[in-house]
Image (cartoon, rainbow over all chains, first blue to last red; front, top):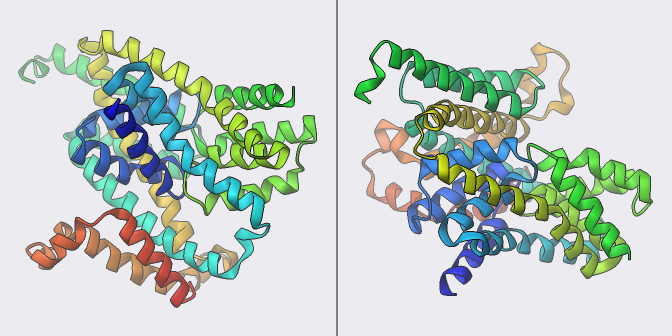
Length: 185
Length: 202
């Protein structure tokens, strides 16, 4: 019971501090879920993100369900997910009820221009951290650069990149096994 | 009855919107046209509000739509509808993943997926960088690009980078003070950035 409450509250905190969607959640997840509570590793977090891209639904919700489910089974998944969405429900309901032109207030605009800069830096740090564990050799470097450039320049669905990258990883390893190089790993 | 309909419509959006956040947008547009619960103009407001409030954008939109339609119970119903398919699908996927986790093939696939995942997040990072450091409303071809750069924002970005990740730079690597600052909660930096944004009117 304690752990379920802990899951709910941790994910509520993450949801309440995430500005700008699923990717912006990553720095908080790394801190709360990986570094502090050890509910998942950085590698697992990346797997969840990759799978979250190809399964329907919101990435933040998918990741919360994954982590919760891994920690405490189905009920854990439900608790973590309800946690991550509850701040939104409360905050948006209040805004919808009281402040019609919230987004047009000048002060809000300036504050969020500042917040966006910070979100950029937080995501950048997350990418650097993830890169250290996921980009280990020539093959993974090539996949990283191809997906980065591909999704910046092309207007293609992330699903395509995820499927191609999975296939590329599999193929590269197969070739390594054939050449006898993969056996050492 | 309208609650059931709200739940069902958002359930569909949650089931078919793949790729997160704004992927729910086309479905919301369809709901607007089909049910008349809100207009497409209101939808634009919702996106603006969602983007400057915490939480996943899709959830914010569902809550906002639900609230404008039927108050707090509507907000809860729409949000539960949106997350319901995710929970079911992810729990199934996690079960399947568990039983294949140790297979060599699955591990090889993840060997390719992890850098791809990093690349996708990197791309999201680039688009956040563009929207936070540049003002593209004055963009008139490549020669005007220098004029679009928001130098105040760039300066703040550099300062924040040093404060949050001093290990990156040679001359800040060994500073104990910076190390302490960098371990502060990200919310501290977000709050500071909001204050700086207001004070220096970003």
